Image (cartoon, rainbow, N blue to C red; front, side):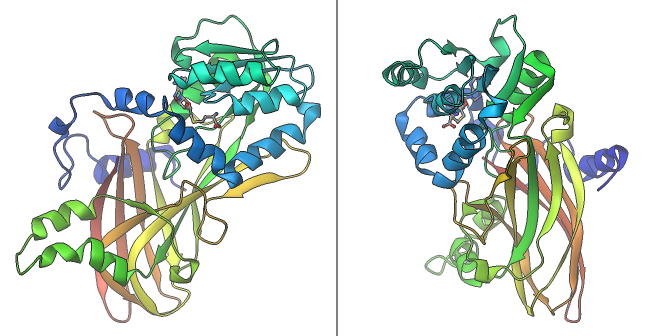
Amino acid sequence: MFTRDESDAALARLLPKGVIPGVVADADFDMTSSDYYFNSYAHFGIHEEMLKDEVRTKSYMRAIMDNPHLFEGKTVMDVGSGTGVLSIFAAKAGAKKVYAIECSKIVDQARNIIAANGFADVIEVIESKVEEVDLDVKVDVIISEWMGYFLFFESMLDSVLFARDKWLKPDGLMFPDKCTLYLCAIEDAQYKSEKIDFWDNVYGLNMSCIKNVALTEPLVDTVDPEQVITTVEAVFPVNMATIKVEELSFAVPFRIRAARADYLHALVAFFDVEFSHCLKKVAFSTGPNVRSTHWKQTVLYIDRALPMEQGEVLEGILACRPNKKNHRDLDIAVEYKFEGKHVNAERLLRYRLR
Ligand code: SAH
C-alpha cells in the first residue's frame, strides 16, 4: 500500500482533475446522475435482480439471522432499505427497533411488505435520503447493501459512512464491515476483438475513433476462471468501521504474476465482502472462481495484447475516484509497466465506469 501522500500524488498524476481524454463529453448529461440513480431504484425490477442474487441475499440473511446475540433488543439502522428485506431479517433476529431509510419510491412497497409480514411495530420506514434524516438516536448496528460494480460504483458508501458518523454508537457494529478490492488479468482475445477491434474495420470502413472510446469503458461481465492467467492480488482493503470518505479516492500499487504463458488483454477487478462480527465467518466473493453474482466482474481492456511468460510480472498503479461532475460515476486509471522476454511496455490508461 501507499502512504496517504504517495496515494494523493499518484492520484493527481493518473487522474488529474478536469476532462479525461477519450471519454465522451459530460454535456450528454442533462438530468443529474443522482436523478437517474434514485429513479432506477423505484421500479421493482432492480430489487428483483438483487433479491434473486442468492449469494448476496443469503449472506446477509445468515449474517443477521444466525447471529441473534448481536441483534436481540438492539436498535438498528438499514441504510437504503429498498424492499425492506434486510430490516425484516434484523427484526426477525430480535431487534427492538429498526429504522429503514429509503429515498426511492420502492419505499411504498417496503411499507406494505413490512406490514404484510407483521413487523410494522418494530420497523419504522423513513422516506428520505439518509443525509436528510432528522433522527435524534444512536444505533447499535448499521446494516446496508451499498456495494456497486468495481465495489465503489454509485458511491453509496459515502451515505453509509455519513450514517455511521452521525448515528452509530462508539461500540456499534457495521454489517458488513470488511471489503477488499482485487485485481487479476485475463486472456480475452475473442471478446476483445468483438468489442474493441471490431471498430478498426466495419464493412471496410475505418471507425477506429470509436475504438478509443470503447477502450475507456470498463465492461461488467462474468469472466471464465479459465481465462485468468495471473495471480490475484488484494489491492484495496476497506474497513467500514474506520474508513473516511476522502479515502475512497485512492491510488494503490499492484504486482501480478503470470501463472502461465499467455497473452494478457485485460485487467479484471472484483471484490469480496465480510461480516466479521458473526460468530461463524460469513463472507462472499464476487470473483470469477465462485458462483457469480449480479455484480459480475469489471473488465478493463488494455491498449494491446501483452505476451507474458509464466512468472513474469506486470506492475503498476490503480487509481480510482468518483467523477467530479457525476458523482455516481467512477474515474479509474491504470498505469502499468511490463518488462518481459518478448516486449517491454509502459502505459497510462483511463476509464470511466457509468
Ligand atoms: N437493502 C435492499 C436494497 C439495496 S439497494 C436490499 O438489500 O435488497 C440500495 C438502496 O439504497 C436503493 O433502494 C437506493 O434507492 C437506496 N439508497 C441509495 N442511496 C441512498 C441514500 N443516500 N439515502 C437513502 N436511500 C438510499
